[in-house]
Image (cartoon, rainbow, N blue to C red):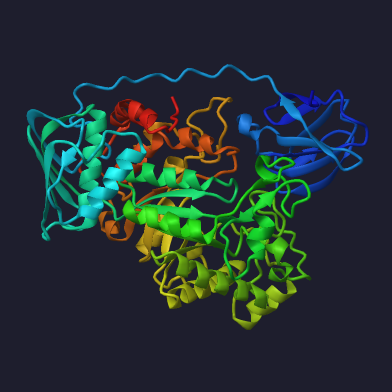
Length: 610
């Protein structure tokens, strides 16, 4: 029987417990969401972010809490994870955490309304019903098509996901080309005996076919007749996935692409680089993925975020990256890779100490509790590594956009670095934000020289000369305010406000639901309770080019845990990204559509939050 750590909670942040059969002299290793303080006898031997190694008499009660007094045990995800004991002889044994959980709250169930205009997400720009039914449970037949590739890709999408077959049935489907339509627009005429798709491009034809796939599913093969005229509101309709904190199996990424395609999302933001790992198997500096891909006991990166004694994790081969790009292309999705600079570089700094100034005494903690997780711009190797990664990564991904990070630099970073301070004096830089601006603008210029458009998080606007520049796209994540400021200053902006689109946040305040809480909890209705472009500043529509959902993986220990975080909230994302602003979704409409899509999520094998 494994040792059991019996825990109790007081004051929402103080954990007291004991391990009755813990061997004397053993070290307790575990991770939490932030750095831990010991409030009883014993000592902390090591901290790496929220990963902690304790030495104490664990057979007696000992007490821990977060160093930061503003942090609480909001839910089960904030309890100790991946606990194990390291014995004196170096062997390790897993520890089971015993914590009394309250019963989960019941979520109120909203029934699907029978009077919904059209059972389709996203809702089309215009729908004119004609009152009939087209029976198409066996699919459609096409004699010839100017967009055969799009129809074939959509058909394979339906087949892979166990939906009704799109092709191979008896219903005639005519596909026409009309160059007067916008590139992603389409028209779909549905009669009692046939259907006609009209589009100007492969993308438009694909989205029309996806609409048919959805209608087959939501109407059980009995599609209502009428005419759909449709086009997206935003050009950028994205979903991000953090694969650094948790390694998702390649098949999971392909499954996510399919889900995105079913809802007409067209940008996959691949976050494979962060403090915890660099997971893409680049050839320029293979050490970074060889040494950081797995974490755990004896690894360069210990068992942060529930890694336990491990080893756990993995890396993505370049062959898989190219296969991912190919599948995404078939689904009209572009892949945006992200290489984090200058912060969120703890793993890189461990592999390459030359990224840091040896004389730097800043001891600057990051939001996640890592000490000195920031590259030093004054170090020559910082630019050598950055240049090599940008060059190689932009060559792998044909979208020719690269996200350069630039978020959450610790405020104290570089302030006690002699080399950074001398560098700032030499270049006329007055503050740390100016030094950050220097490196991110230089990286953006180099990305442009590689034929790629730079992208970055909202903090990249900081600095004495107006920020990153160089035609960069900025992603507004702490809220809409920074994105609006950037748009007013001429930047192109993608809105991804945490309060509405950070799907790692919990749906509710229920203690039994694991997840983030820093931006509040995020029920389905909040995904549509906002305006990407403020109604009183319509001129910003020209610079706000899209919306994107984000899924960060600090709370994820298994791939399947992502699914109920995204579904059904991804319905709100796609409504905001596609649906016409003159007819926005609301709380009731999105709740009803979630019920309509419950059986579809079940059919494609995607777990939902209910």
